[in-house]
Image (cartoon, rainbow, N blue to C red; front, top):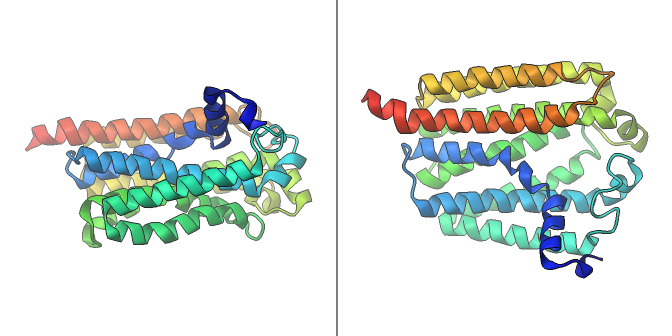
Amino acid sequence: MIAALPGSGRLRTFASLVKLSHSVFALPFALLALLAASGGAPGWRTVGLVVLAVVAARTAAMAYNRFVDRDVDAQNPRTAQREIPRGAVAPSAALGLVAFASGVFLVACWLLSTACLWLGLPTLAWLLGYSHCKRFTSLSHLWLGIALGVSPVAAWFAHDGAFGPRLLAPVCLGAAVAFWVAGFDVLYACQDEGFDRGAGLHSIPARFGARTAMHAARLLHGLAFVGFVAFGVLVPLGAAWLGGCGLAAALLVWQHRLLSPHDLSRIDMAFFTANGTLAMVMFAAGCVDLWWLLPHRS
């Protein structure tokens, strides 16, 4: 069926398959780490390769997730209209996209440095492994969080090219991203609490119920806030970053106020609007400090 679509239609279908717009969650933090590592002045080649690597890695992981989950998605009323279950994308085409995007990711890593290539191999394995972890652990949310949280560390390493004390700052940012992503993934999984339990899939909502899951998400988001502040202290960043952290905290609180165990009707606003805005706010705050406030301070 995919072959019958015009070229632009195929691209839109594949972009929808991998939720390309959700790159807004990881990419701003990877770029922020790269900017901080380089003092606000990375080379355009490095910026381009980091963007390519992040988008390609995420594309490979999402396409593989849709392939692995195709049978489960077909049984779940919420996901039955995804591209593979409804026949818009063939499973073999999804696997082809996985192979292509994985290759692009590894080439981008190689062009950054040989060390980045070798580190890219286990990173790719971790990203693809996420698609299987819901079959055996309720900590799949943290697995996903780490998958996105590695991007700031990798971007910083792409600039420095070595391990050292400076990596503590991006590790704090990566941990913050991991806790933040895990927290909103727990909230998102509350939609499928009953289905996951019946299908034998593991998640915090399926194991403990939505109410406890929402408390766990609050804890994870509290830890994310601590990580964001710690990153600003270690770089160091200034008043704009602290203001961004304050806005991020407000967005996290708003996200949780939108939802309750018995009312998930505003989950899309809580998931994409609040979290997409948070990522862009934090990136903008970091850029203000790196490009304007801190240079004027010296």
